[in-house]
Length: 463
Figure 1 (cartoon, rainbow, N blue to C red):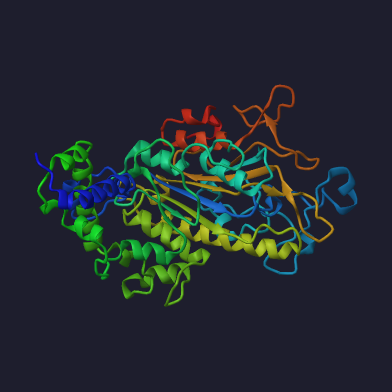
Figure 2 (cartoon, one colour):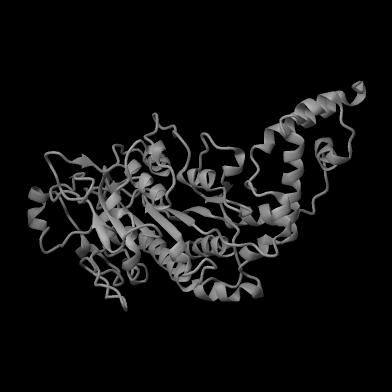
């Protein structure tokens, strides 16, 4: 066929641009015909929530507390552990670890929580597994964060591999419009097609702008060509580009986008609307936005999962934790805001029936983590510094519940050396618990391939 010299350059620019962005579509592998014919969005049968507490949390306040009657001030030189619970200036925080009241119909709690974990989250101990004594092998913020997100030790500060959420979506190919959302959390895709990418947002407004229909006029020739793509004659050059599926991929992606926009999915996250009054009430949200505090973020997660919009949500739920000076109270307040929001999210998922049977927590796996912990002793500026030994919280589907695995040392809270089959201390033949063990466990909890971690999951945690 003969090329038209007047349009060749512009069409080539368009086609190459199209080829570039096609791989980044967020609308998964769901065929448009199935998507368009669905009368209502259906929640994924298995959902995942990855909750990040940014800055390095104080695990003595959270999931690895110590008894202040044993680890006393006069023994600090011996134990190198200072709980510091007597330093609180806010009556909301008790001066000792908390064992939650027994939940109706459940066994008593086998988990002891630090004072920053409020009653709302601790009440769900019967859905939890706490892992203690994790060796982060790094004290750098970026490295620790990326290590936990991917389950692979970074090269320097550079992430290796895909985010765990990307692994989940890439393997499961969920039939939801936006398979993965990453809210103020880094996300990576190492080896999956673009439809496994997370939709990245840094605030709730970003999500609304993505899902809402645009009223902006086309302001470039490229955009006009994109809109008019299907009406143009096909040249030899275009056929060559289209041989790789660019044309059909664009067509499908555009139609999926139109379907999403026509469904006004953005309204589900506009919590100021009258139709979302119950959500506002449940999460204690104001009548007008933006809804970017911890409670608003938790409401966003619940909405995305319950309405069948997403399968995975990765979210930064607490910040202000990189404090090397100040009081115990400041750190406890920042953690409590995140833990209370997480407790509300679990309340919501637990009270809501899932169309596949049971409630949403029966179909949801939650991982709560930070890049490392804070030192078990308090420094000269009344704060805590970076510490290798970490802990994390696992909840929900595919896991055993109401248990702890591993243990940090009673001297300086050193990383655990344990029998990975049982979690019991084994100084002679034991192994350090690493972030890759946690990620392998999350993937195995849904019977997914965890070989990318190059370790076995913590099988004692698997249901």
